[in-house]
Image (cartoon, rainbow, N blue to C red; front, side, top):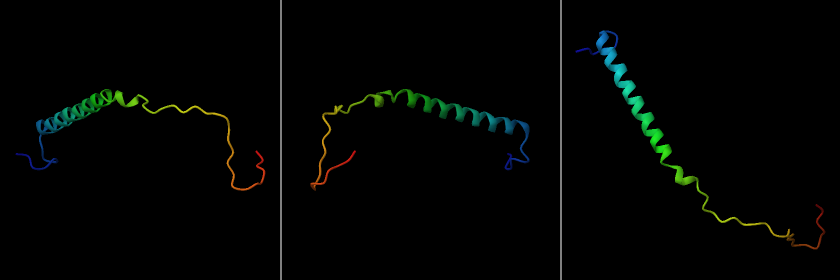
Length: 66
């Protein structure tokens, strides 16, 4: 058994690379499927409030300059 990455033979390195590649593909696949399944969140559910006439509120009798 190879206990060190430095003393490992060629087949052990190949196994490590293969496992890392499979794990990377699995993580990417899960990320893509989760992203494709989350399209329901883009729908706008809030009411649209339309603007009316402008209103100025003041607590003093000073005139406001715009």
